[in-house]
Length: 130
Image 1 (spheres, rainbow, N blue to C red):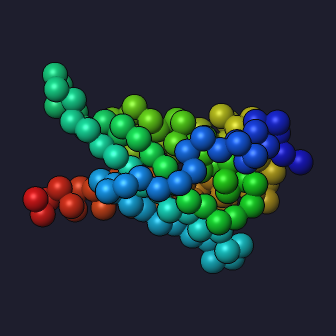
Image 2 (spheres, rainbow, N blue to C red):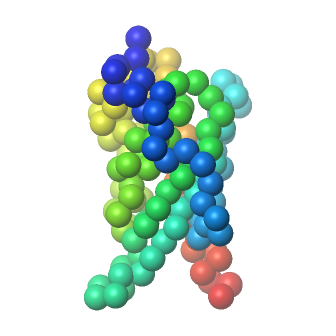
């Protein structure tokens, strides 16, 4: 049974789609259930403290209600965070924010964390090349 918050994010995701010319892209998947998530990030550098901040995030997820809800709420939680803050996000934080997930759907919360780390690594690798 899904919480009302899970269903709200599943039925009305705010962050679904792509970002044109993203700064980083991360893809995560679960071969057991077949869920996949692509996470796109746009990063800006703050003028005063020179910290890299996630300005925008979008996702494209193929999967169940839990996978889509996790993707959407993770974007809510990460927008406006510095790269350092974003890397501290844990799957338990996402589950708590959603009001819980069924035990069989906990693995969906790991998709967002894995995709985020890959998107940040992709961003950092692009930055090194320029």
